[in-house]
Image (tube, rainbow, N blue to C red; front, side, top):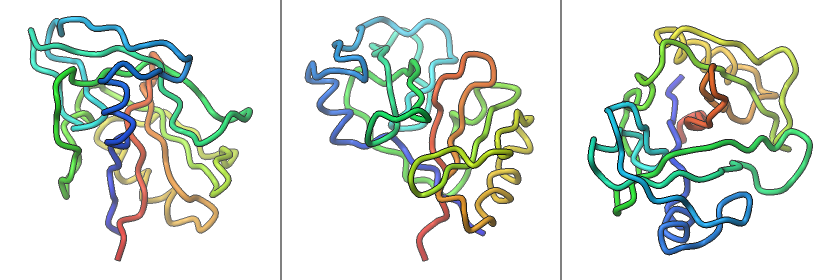
Length: 157
């Protein structure tokens, strides 16, 4: 199975950069990136140390409902291209392990799929989850801070 690592929607990112609201109705915080571990959820690479960075609340679901988790994310403050790579994106190297959960087409967690997996096993576990026809997508979150990292889907044919 080929996996598609999905960046956050470009239109939404542009709106936030222009001062639009985050998931809590607030504008993003503008800061300077410190260190090298600040993953942008749009380009799926790291914000360069010393570059402008946005911190905001993100809910990667279309509507409020009990399983629509919200958490903090980072974005490059300046324009960046959305991830389009064929391999595992750089943001998937930011932690030793990740929390992966499978979701049904109606954006509900498929119980029993949530698992913290070592970085080197995340891709294989995502493939296992997506082999189940009940799973529409897999969300990857920080295992320590619950920050949304990215969504993984089956690659289109």
